[in-house]
Length: 216
Image (cartoon, rainbow, N blue to C red; front, side, top):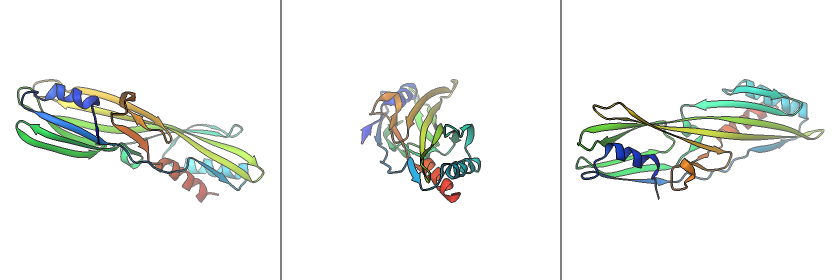
């Protein structure tokens, strides 16, 4: 387990009483996923290209650019259910708040988590944690030979982590962080490996390949 120091410390600096309350935060890193981001098909370039275009056209992706001569399709996407596509480990908070035992566990990729905290005067307040996902994919189609074509998927994931702290008598405090990573890379907050880490599950890439193969 790794200590997660990023914005949670800032949150407890806003809401937690250093004298009475002590909350620890541990995080388990994401799993490693074995998935393909490149495949070779024993079909002509034109046939594979048509299958890719039809696959993209029937999906939830937004097609931003298409260039058959260069073999590039550019897509964008978004999801309010990040855990379907990325793994951001598992988080556990434990300790005491207002002299009472406090414990909360959740997936790092959960889209919505309501946390309980207290301000220095002991007044209860809440911190709503929201995670959303967006990104862009480039699908590269390359002719290898007359009846052999390669398809590569290069995806850039953008996970936005937003905390809204509601303290009685004050305006909500908003803390925002963005985690950017590509393909099989691991992304984290602020480039610090001790912070929350995220990586792709390969769901997006696998779904595109499956849709292509259904049309070949």
